[in-house]
Length: 264
Length: 145
Image (tube, rainbow over all chains, first blue to last red; front, side, top):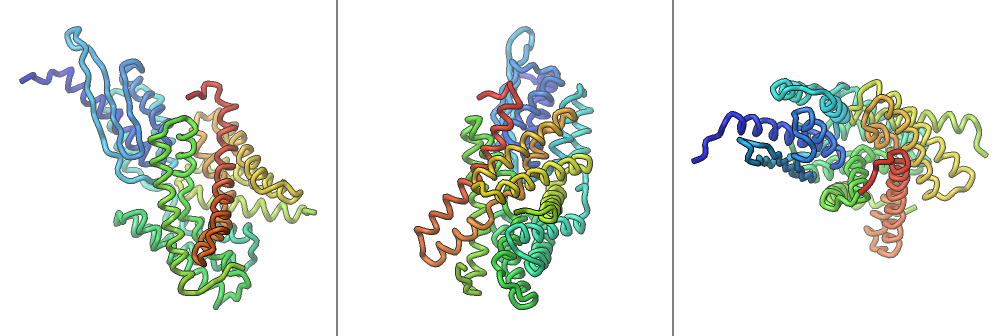
């Protein structure tokens, strides 16, 4: 049985680190080209030149192969890592982009990656809830609503977001989560708009209240991937985003069937 | 005829939407300020175009294009990935109403109008993507397949 030499182990560690960076960028909502770019820079900083590096990046799995010389014989090491869930964390994308610009030795890089992975969100949950509430409320006015629609959309989206936080922590299936949060947001905004605030157009509050569930990042990334002819990433990300949109629609549909709103 | 008051109101609304989503996306503070400026500018530009009669699709395309260019200008010097600002900046342009109409029409069995709304929503989403992509193509000469 071939023994793993010290060089093999170093190469395994280096290759795994490159893969780990790729997974982290994807999990934070990076598009595939962004992920590959960051992986390439990290590889370079770990002394793996671009022509000794092969990557396969999809939204669900990352594969990295590095080529190196052992006793003048060309050998390679491949790692394949699953991405897990897809989220959005711009600070993390920026941090990983930053880390990739410096030449850290492998163990220091691993420490930095640990720090990034363990970093807390920049804004407290309450602040994010408020931000989301104001955003959805403002969107209701942009859609043509007034103060009642603003209030209904704001409160409904805040409640939905609060519950969403809890369910994300429990790692609920994203489609189930989105459908349920859509029901909560739409139902609450309808109830508030119609019965409490006497809005003439409750549908505007309902539409605006689910804005925080719209998968903007995967959708845009999917289109960017497709335009760059990365078909695997583009199509799979697009399907993921479309299913999320359908989940929102199912939630809205459910509430509509209970309240019987017609197109006005 | 749009007034200064209208523009100020839309600026506030655009800023609120962009900052809210910026926090949801965990955008770092220094970048968030720039994202809000870029998003608000795109929104006001789109609003102004629609007020003078430009179609929703063209106005959205030009608005997204503005966000793409202005966003690039803001991130290039600081070496920040531009997606952080451009994706946050176009949230105000999400085609909410056609999507909602699509659901209602299908719900009531009106497939024809439902499909019309689907196409409208897809074209609007495509306008956003086209605007951002065009901005990306003309600002990154090494951008190639």
